Structure formats: structure tokens, C-alpha cells
Length: 411
Image (cartoon, rainbow, N blue to C red; front, side, top):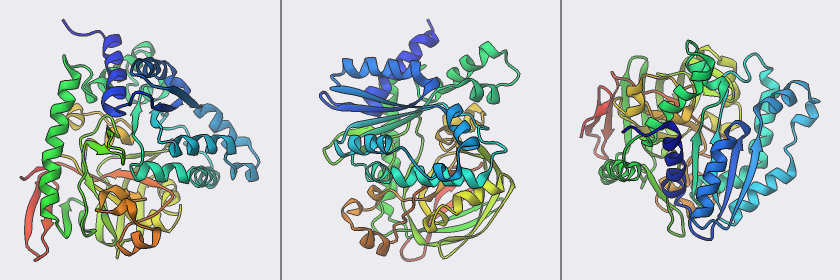
């Protein structure tokens, strides 16, 4: 008998605690949640305490209030981020609390808003929370990111459905992507993570010096840092907690060299970024840096990302996802990077993950830069994979080996 949606949502909450976070008895949990995600946050809280959590702290955010502030607050106030909120994040990270982010985004929240004011808000937030995000990007603590349906998001995806059915239909799609609809979700995740591990181990052994991408609108070579590490599915903290940072996840990823990216790359899916949509964009790289950026729509938002800082014009992540991934097969554009990046191979502008290179988490900022590790206040994934994409690995002797053919694994 098929499980009801309510039972599946409860199973998802269990997966978040047991598989995503791998919450430890006695550990504290910080939940960063949209107010529309309150019901799911409460479910996770129940499961967390049942698993022996010492304390659950919640920081709420409300997109509607954030929009009103963006529209009406004095400009000098936009450059401030509440110190108590920043300190709460930093304290949790310094204690190595588990951290769960629950998103419930409106893809068009900031449509038509002043991009210069939004840039000020984004920079202030990233600057204030930099110590927190440094803990995240070095895998210093177990963390997980999920998204749950909001009414605006559901209406965007399913405009032809009755309003009362839109969120339910979005829940159906999300629960399928996280395998909560299966008879034994935990077993399904174990098998899935083992598959990602096999891909990761193969690529680690190869140690390609670069990857070459060929597809319509894309002719790109991405150098990889020496002693790079491919990650996928599970990640360990320094204390040995094995966690899954994103649910869903279908990718294996590693670190590009910040100065060794050359050529053209075209997006294969729209990028929804902080309530704005960027469509059909092309980036040109020279010696690692974006030297040209054009988009059919949302070009001002694209340039706002690139102008965050110097590192925002360079790559911090290269990720491989087969075109036949379960999320791709749903045929849904989610307008949410968490899902859309797991439907296609992708890249990320901005900060690199230190744990994707050997000894990277022990390097000083200067040592990291010398090894080709990119640094930035931002990290923005964008999708480039398609059914016609071929990717080759370039060995240290210059020979080419197929990694993907027509969007699928070639090994």
C-alpha cells in the first residue's frame, strides 16, 4: 500500500536527522529556517530530540519582511547585518553544532527590485557571516541543506493546478528526489551513496590535470588543483561524523584551479538567485577569470554576482552529474539550485571548498592561494550539463580519456 504524503514527509524528517546531519547524541542543532518551513522544522526538532539532541536552536527568516526592508530601509541601514544574528551563527559554528538550513524560496521574490540595493544587502550578509561560512566550507561541522514547498514557489512550478493542490504536488516531487517515497528510504540512501563513492574513488585515482567540456555553446578547459579530491554524497568532519550536506544529491565534485580556466561555457538551465532569474547566459573565461558575461534575461543579477569580489569571477567548484539523474528525469525546472544542480553537471563561481584538496583545510589563506584555491564571499552554482555534452579528462602526459559522453558516465 502506498505511503501517504504525511508519512513520507515524516520519513524525510528522519532522513535529515539520521542521514543528512547524522546528528550525534549530546550534540546541539541550529536550524536556519524560512517561516513557511516551520511545520517541517518542528518535525525535524521532534526527531532531533528523539535522537538525543542536547538543544535545538532556531533562527527564522521571512522573505516578505526582507523584501520590505530592501524596498524601504535607508541605504546606510542596508549595509548592516544584525550583530546578534551573526554572533548566534558564529557561536554555533565554533561549538561544532550541527546546522540545518531549510529553504522555502520564492523564485521571483526580488523581480524588478533595485539590484544595487540588493547587492549591498548580500555583501553585508556574507561579510557578517563569513566566519560561519568558513566552517561550512571547510567541513568543520556536520550540516545539511534542504528545501520544502512554499506557496509562491509551488505556484511558479504548477500554475495550472488548483491553489490547494500546488504545494501537495511540489511535495510529491521533492519527496521523490530525496527517496522518501520508497519502502526503505534509509536503505535506498545507503545504496545511492555507495554508488557515488565508487565514482569518486575512480576519479581520485585518475588525478586528471584538467577537464575538457564540449557541447552546444560550450568549449571549455578547466584545470584542476594538484592533489584534488573528488567528493560525493558523504563528507566527514574532523571528529569523524559522516554527513550528507545536500538532500537531494546526485553529484561528485572537486576543486578547479582558480587561474587555469579558459574558454566559453553556456548555461543549460536558468539560475534562480536570491529571488531573481538568470536565463540563457554565456561566460567567457581567460586564465581563470570571467572576462565577458551575457544573458538573455537577468544580466544585471549575473553581473551583481560577478562583482561581489575578485574571487566571484573565478570558479570554486566543478561537479559532474549524469543527464539521466532522477531529478533530470522528472522533467521539472525547480527554480531552486539545490534541485536543478542535481539535474545537470555544473560549476560554481566563488569560494572553493577547502576539503576538496589534500591538506586544504590546514593551509593558511596565502598557502591556499598559492595552490590555486579560490576565495570569495559568495558561492553560486550554475548548470551547464546536457544530453549533448562530452567531457574528457586530460592526464598529466596530455592524453585524453572519456569521462562523459552525451551527458552520461563513460566509465
